[in-house]
Image (cartoon, rainbow, N blue to C red; front, top):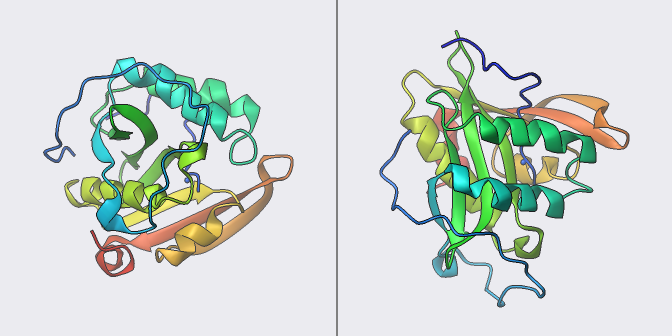
Length: 205
């Protein structure tokens, strides 16, 4: 498939298939005025459900971006993210949202790199009020399932900032390069990789 027709596709993850996923109805984004209910940091209590992105999720995903800007994204990246969302759905870049009680609280996807055995994490983010509740790990697990269902994929890659490099290193990713101010002033670009065969040990599902 030829490259997407819009400029500047950025392979990003805060922090950054089609498997059979439970369907859910898009809900309009809700304004959160307080922290979510306290949840212990254990996977057993995390009930966030992944499902494919739908066009009616646009506003909710943009709200996630806005809530993480700054420090995880630069304001000028918003138009690029919106253009990416408006290009979906697309077979070569499956994208997911995680929902809790019908509310979109995380999103992220993969894009297959043409002519390679690599898939890259793209535009991953978790609602700011839900940081620290293992949603980042849950989002990684959902994307690992996507990668395992993509024929010929043997390696995962991502580009993230210094703020979330440690998170991905904890899941087994190795940093291959760092570009100071690569995403904007004060926001370094960290390129990372993980062999898919090692992913189950680093981040079991």
